[in-house]
Image 1 (cartoon, one colour):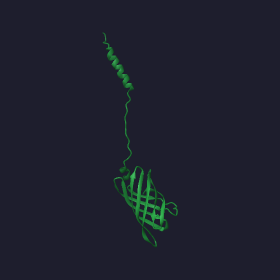
Image 2 (tube, one colour):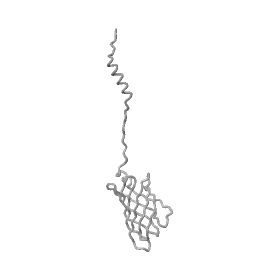
Image 3 (cartoon, one colour):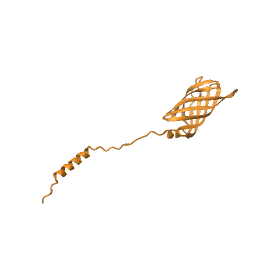
Image 4 (cartoon, helix red, strand yellow):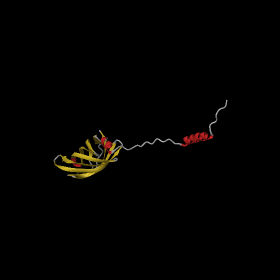
Length: 155
C-alpha cells in the first residue's frame, strides 16, 4: 500500500502558512478615555466643607459649598464662609469645570455683629485632587480684601 505524497506546491503553501502564522501578532486595542466634564461635575454634587485651620488676618475659614445643580459643565449652589472681623459670608457659588480645574465665583452678603450687611465677591481656580478640592481664592468684603486657600472635602 502506497500513500500519496502531497504535491510540492501544497507542501510549500502549508509551510508558508505555518511560518506566516508564527509571524502574525494578534493585537487587541483598547482605548481608555478620561471621564467627561459632565461626569466630573456629577462627582461634585453634594455638601463640601473645609476643615478650619488657624487663619491669617486676611483669610477666611469654614468654607461650605452645597452643590445642588449642574448644567453642562457648570455647577452651582449655596456658599458660606467665616472671615476676619467676625464676618459671615452667605450667598451662592458657581463653578465651571475644565479638566481637573474649576473656575469659580461666590457672591452674596457679609454680616457681622454691629455692622450693616454688605456685598462680597470671591473668585479663584480650584483644583480637584483625589477626593478633595484645593480652593485658592481672593476677594473683597466690606472690611477689606481677603485671600487664602482652603481644602474642601465631601461631608
